[in-house]
Length: 125
Image 1 (cartoon, rainbow, N blue to C red):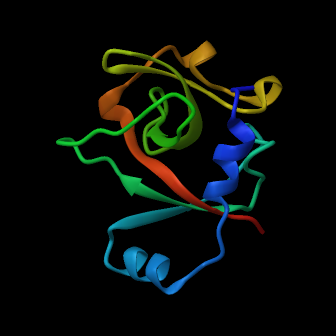
Image 2: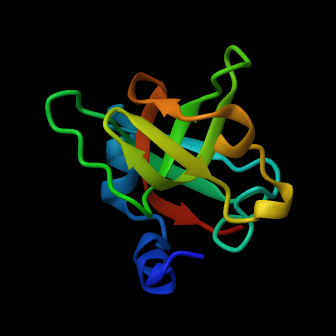
């Protein structure tokens, strides 16, 4: 577990508001429903997340961020994982539930171009 994780996670948990709905409608934010338990401890199956698409001109990713990425081996599949380490333009992504997560330990480092966005809000079911 990453130090300070409890405090970082609390800021992500929010209730839906008009601004969030507006940003979803205009496409500035995207949303996904969590499937599986690889991020259990932070996300549980059925939770809704919103994420901000990565801006190639201003990539603001750091260790501890939760990101949405394209699965490197299965076309059209997305994964939600936490950045564990950063190596130039490659990322070690890990699930919070390490016993039940397919992540960089099996998939290898994830290239920057596979990272779609950074989770900015979590709506628990």
